[in-house]
Length: 222
Image 1 (cartoon, one colour):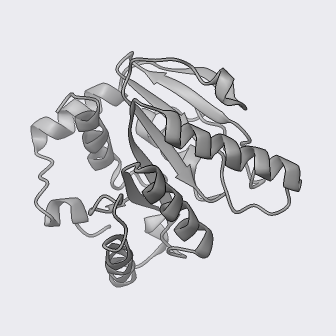
Image 2 (cartoon, one colour):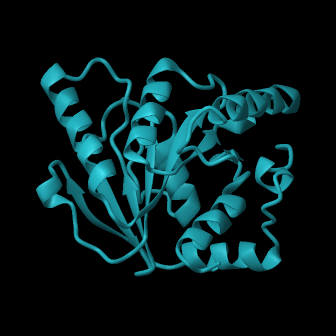
């Protein structure tokens, strides 16, 4: 059992109505739009957009699948670094989800890594409808050097980002509480960081309803 979401502890109350809006939003049809490897391929849309970023193997695909209630919408793999493009998903014609390539995987060719990095940088700086980036962090390991580099890039791009801890079921309650406190302490130093952390477990479903409610608010449904 996870401790209460730190979102609630900071005064943002996901009441039953907000949770229901989130449930209804993510119960809608979610369709894969396309995978972009260059900015020219990124789809034009008037929908509010949420980006998901994180280290390779942090559980991005599993979280997206858990949020949408679909087992294979986003492809999961035992091979880190498999996703090498920005994958876009249309959620009920109300919200666009963008799954960014995982970072921190050194076995890919250097030219490919440069291409990913350039695409992500251009996307973050040029996406007008981007409401928030969800920065996924493995709760077992906390923030790493590569995560901090991404946080600095998001600060520079002035993109609001919110840390979402994944795989929280792997930690005992006291250890998870300490991890959350440590992350919150670092976020206070970053101007573009959202002050709340969402603790999730895609495997057990913990924190999924709260995250749906948060994203529904960003889709102007709150």
